[in-house]
Image 1 (cartoon, rainbow over the protein chains, first blue to last red):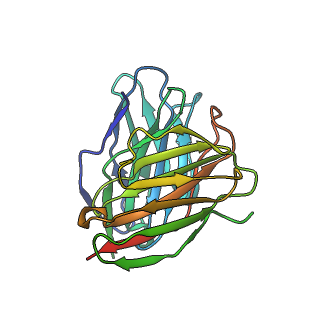
Image 2: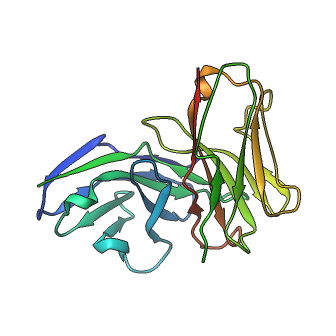
Image 3: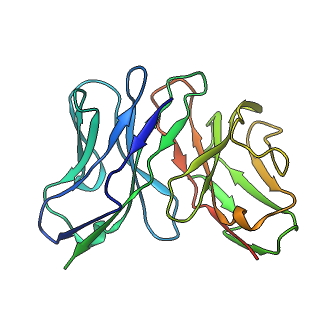
Length: 114
Length: 115
């Protein structure tokens, strides 16, 4: 069965500094990996995905993620954090079974300090 | 393109009462998901529909939860009777084609509080 781990409950960075939100996964086949962001009282918004191809994936709002097959990781990154990036971030892996369902990690709360 | 719509946005009920949530997916999206998101946790899949058929309801507590998507468009999720532990945000999501690499898009959710 697929699973996702986000080892940090919370990440704090200063505005303007680079940020990294970590994600590791476990899948039986090819990994389809996603990052979503959730602002207070809002649904999840899609940021980016890795299906195949380049290991560095670029997404919305200046975010990017690096796929590392040997380390089974898909860390989310941004070169320069903004206060408005403060939110809850979820990594997800898509099930390769018939239903192709998504399994989400527990989430990481990112706080960008002014 | 309009997003996934959900209603109501908030609902407060007492335990043992019943409640229903409604979802209208993005037009043309064949796949619809209902998730339960308990505070501090990631979303957990409850049920997946492909058009009007159920693909996966293995994590749906069927003794109290039910869902339908009769015409393959809108969907309703019902809880009867509700328990305190059902307090959560219920998220609906839709996706264009199951089996493709298309992304799923989420609605704003319904926050349920059971007293």
